[in-house]
Image 1 (cartoon, rainbow, N blue to C red):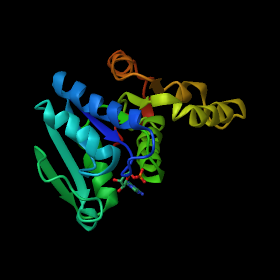
Image 2 (tube, rainbow, N blue to C red):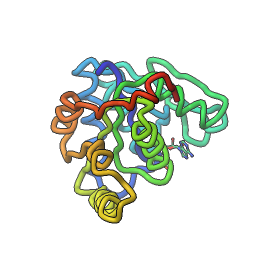
Image 3 (tube, protein in one colour):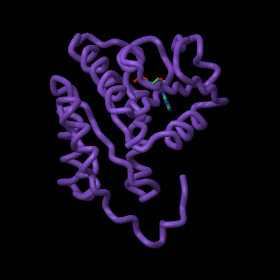
Image 4 (cartoon, protein in one colour):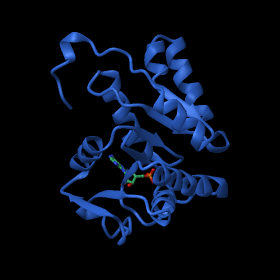
Length: 193
Ligand code: AMP
C-alpha cells in the first residue's frame, strides 16, 4: 500500500486514547512510507492523524470542499491541499488517491464516508482493504449491527468479512497488507466508480 485514506471525526470526542491512537496511526504511516489522505481539517481526530504523520515527516494530502475550509479549519501545513467543488468530488478524489481505507472513531460524516467506500467494494468497484481501528471497542456495537444484518439475510457473510477490525494500529495494518479481496464478478470488471 502506498497511500491510505483515513476517515474520522471532525470532533475530538471524549476518549483521550482515541486521540493518541490517531497520532500513532499518522506516525506509523509516515514510518511505513505510506501517504496519508484525509479530509484536511486541523481539528478533531482528523487533526491528530495529520499531526502525527507530519511530525514524523510523512506525506499528507488533504482533500476538502471549498465551503468547508473555514468551518473545518483546514490544516495550513500539509504536503498537498486539494480543494474540491463539493462533497461528491471530495470523496471521489480521496478514492482515486488511496489504495486502502481506515476508519477511526467519528460521527455521521465518518460513517457516511466509510460506508460509501464499503458499498463500492461490495459492488466490486474496487478491491482495496478496508479497516476499522477499534480503539477501546468504540465500534463494537456497529460490528454487532453488521452481524445482525448477516443473520437476518441483509448482508452476505463474505461482504461482512471485507471489514477488517483491530484495536491496534500495527495489527490493523498487518491485516490490511495481507488482505485478499473477494474476486470481482466478470460483468463488473470494466466498471468504474
Ligand atoms: P464527522 O464524523 O461528522 O465529524 O465528520 C467527519 C468528516 O466527514 C468531516 O470532514 C465531514 O466534512 C465529512 N462529511 C460529513 N458529511 C459527509 C458526507 N455526506 N459525505 C462525505 N463526507 C462527509
